Image (cartoon, rainbow, N blue to C red; front, side):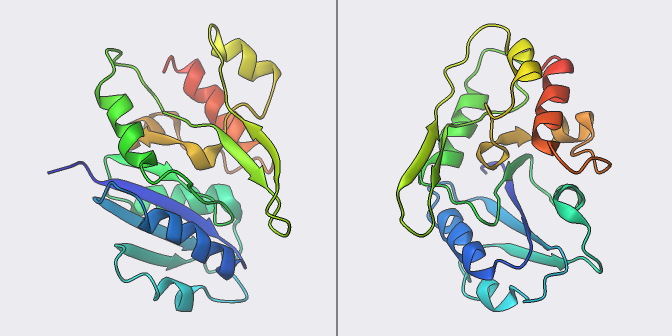
Length: 194
């Protein structure tokens, strides 16, 4: 049987955008997925949106208080059962139907044993005009640690797929910081020699 991949979505007051994110999961060619949704105490419950996605294996949890994205994502990972973790922002979508399948193939077919994560490029699209604002397709080679320590924005959490054991080994998101949680996570990933 194929390895289970846990898709972790932290959400807060964006049920319509959550629908778009879930549609992109539903379109994935890789089928052994569970979706963990952590609602960070939204005013508007996303349960009516979630109920539309009967084809997905969704587990929904709601925080008692607004605890921010780092806490919510870490909670989602702790509740997950997958061998791999895929992060997805509630306001993001995966445009490649084979994203998970391709990333798993990359990890499993690599000759390197210390792969900590696989990332993709990403595009910023204006929600109103639907025009592309910016695209980032990393073509970084060499000492990635040095480059990420001096520059943010070369990796996006919503594109990541990583073994859950790696997430656990580096401690997940740092819940004590409010900005730059993705960059902090990626730095610690590289410092740990992944």
